[in-house]
Length: 90
Image (cartoon, rainbow, N blue to C red; front, side, top):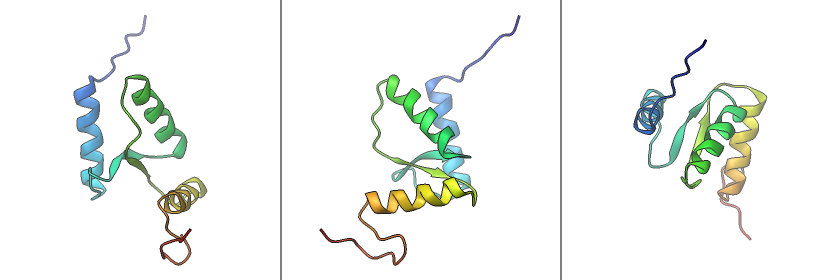
């Protein structure tokens, strides 16, 4: 028999904040850090099932193709051209 121990909500939030602090990212802007976009998506979906809204973005670590694409997608969603870092109009 295998015992699975899940962290409490408070412990999970503390771990996310520690990850952000290590990455020197603001907890006001970022929800947490993840190794892949899939990991960030899965964690965010579980948080939403618990009633939390998607109000902050995730930082995807590494130089993987997924990380680069996630960064570009985020910039476009926030109204910034990822190639020039200029604000998109319209």
